[in-house]
Image (tube, rainbow, N blue to C red; front, side, top):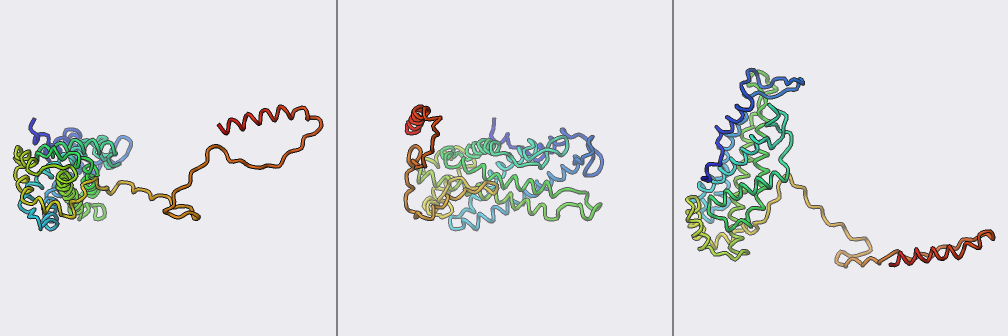
Length: 323
């Protein structure tokens, strides 16, 4: 199966919505049998239209950011090819998010809502599939170990942008001056999508640098592997021309996973006790129970015959604690 055939189109997404929801006359919202508001097909199609417009704007926004960020290595000569591949990759994420109902439920026929963000397991699964796809398109399967782990966290930008567009498109234009669409919904969505595009390109270039440095790879061998791909051949020649500049670029020195906006920050280590310096090693904890001196109790004459049995049981307990 050709790799490009698995990329959904906007027409495919709209058709899936239409088939799932059917014809629904009326305004933006209708009432469910339980009297809860549910969005109509017309509203959902307008939401998809805004997301589509935002994707188009995000392409040139990401290209402009990357052009300024990597102007010293002439990224403008390959930026169109990179943005084209990254945009197609983002379409796979958008299709999985929208049609698969990965961002919640509760609108329409139980699909396509904005109830909750995708789980970590779902994001990792999508990330593995998409990373395999984009590396195969560019002929960069050799750098997979430096690329795959960082991709799922970047999907936060795409999911956040789709969520902004979905929630910002919410009313009938002109019918309710306080309940219409967010006038900045497309710009806000495009901002998040462009961030995702930019981070994917940086992660890709950083993975190439990591492969050539930490992975002890050879640029000529990697470029020859990329020649087999129509999308990767030009990138491979550009890499050979700017190999040293890529190795020295500060933004490409760490190809590890980027921390996403939704990830929990790592908790700092606990501070040392006030009576111990920070550089002083922690003392070893003693084994067993510490010995304590307690006052002896008095035994009445009536229970003097019980003392030997008490001493025997106490000795057994002490022996067990020591062992």
